[in-house]
Image (cartoon, rainbow, N blue to C red; front, side, top):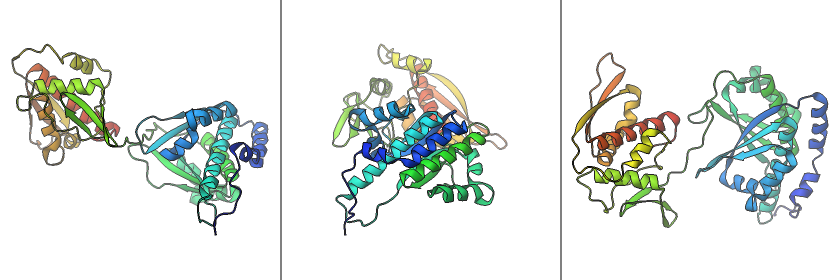
Length: 362
């Protein structure tokens, strides 16, 4: 039998049914908990779309009515980070609006469903791992207390999120239970600030293939090839001008991952400026680098795939010395024109940056 609940409730109507929120609001004001706090949520793309709304109207309304700053991370990622900042009462208002919006989405989705019971609203917080111990409590006492007093289900992930020192805390239940639960979690976070530096979780971009044709870089989106930003095309053109075995204009091997992390460093900008007017045959020279042993793997790649790509794109000869007993570093010798060497250095640094920051393989 299909779910027979009322499927015509608007967000405003659901919002008016928030007794727990009104009660909590008065308690918070009385308790003097009104300090500025930042809470991070991890959401899937569909959830983010619901929060943003048509032409951004929903998130605009949430910002205006709650008084909280609500920022949504950009990027072509399956997951996005929603950051809510403000006084605690503004944060609770924003959470209430998000929880009731998700409740509305669930009710609307069930109008065409054969489900007989309504699933709970679920939110995922991103919390510094150093605060999770206080949230769990000795022998799990605190998290048990939060579950029992709010009626919400709360789960703290055992592992940290990739390339970060944060954990996911999943809360599910009715919107009212979630709001009460968030309030208690905020109290714990205020009483037990994070210890040491926190490395925030950054969702990894969805891998977008890049191809080169006719001296232009393209990304594949669905069935279409979209011209890629100028920097990547210029970088490719520079590589092809300096690479004798791949004529400019022919399709060449793609970057196997996302676009290069072109930082606005002087080196990168100088590199971009060299895309024309190069000497026909500049003299060859040699440059040496030392790389920590534990990072050399990301330069070499599986069966040498990464280093071969760097050689082909830069046109430089690159030799990696064998590991020396007792040494924690490996020497890399780059030979070629100054432009070859500069490009090879840049590509090696880009590989190291992506490995250290968790930006994903280039």
